[in-house]
Image 1 (tube, chains in turn cyan, yellow):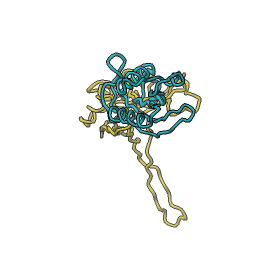
Image 2 (spheres, chains in turn orange, blue):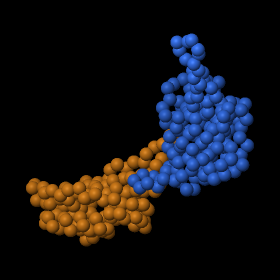
Image 3 (cartoon, chains in turn green, blue):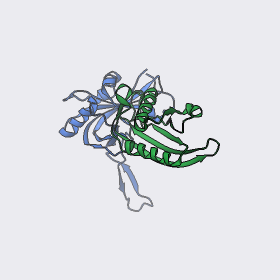
Image 4 (cartoon, chains in turn green, blue):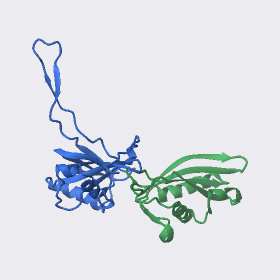
Length: 138
Length: 164
């Protein structure tokens, strides 16, 4: 099937994460350095890819399995862990409409991997990183 | 008529299945006739498969020992066309896949299949008559669900052709 539009992915991720962690602000990655709140989240989309299959038909493809990284920044370490749990409980294993009615799409499964926590001495912020893989029927 | 004169990537191959619930498979002469074969190789007949498996002819050989000889002899004998086990990403609404599924259920429907390979300009066709079998769906998580089926070609019923 036709390649999914990354713009839709971006809009859906922004919406879905905002819904989960509200009122904590959510930004696309490029806004990270401008964020001054004591808690905020950024996301980065990567690995948008549908495997291509044989022949001249451009739409002979498999499903898309994009991954987005969620970066949680908090001044209090425990706040970050709490927010990461909100995301885990909401997204890990989730199946259904992802990203709201306007820009959302159906995902068969969302698979969240809690990667690691860290601390940035320069920014004085604790960090937690998670990966979320979406299985999107195409 | 010109053959593609390049080494072809595997991606250059595509597969088509004759349409219709009760098709009239091509005759042996038609299987080697470009007009008949290319008429089947149209987008509506395209099987969206992941890859084209090995196709052609199996090996078959008889060994003979000759009295008094230092060596035995191997003689090629009747060899079957290669059965093809094919995997496709499963779209439940794909009409060509539904047709293959119906063929497998029926078991005796004989249909002409065409494999094309192209360098982008010229096309070579391998056409054969076969019956579908073992249609199953593998919904293992982590990738798309797969529809897998086997096509058993009929003996002595295939041909090669190419376009200009």
